[in-house]
Image (cartoon, rainbow, N blue to C red; front, top):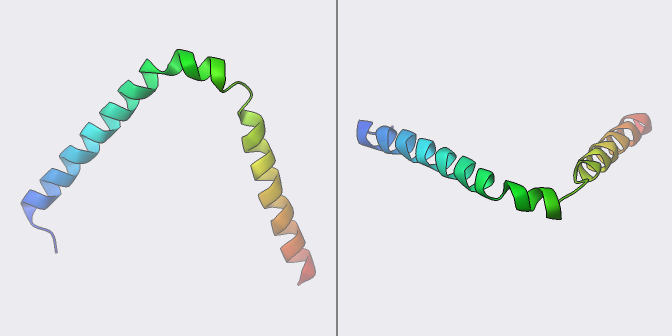
Length: 61
């Protein structure tokens, strides 16, 4: 389905992408701590909403 060249390119692209994302995150870590305090609360609320919808859906059947 894919040629060996395409597979090699995909692997190298993925590795480069991950390395650049880690570098970018590390570079902006100080700003993230200042501007994005308590964002875990948003995650907890989103998970709670999904669980609530699941409970409502299963209880209606």
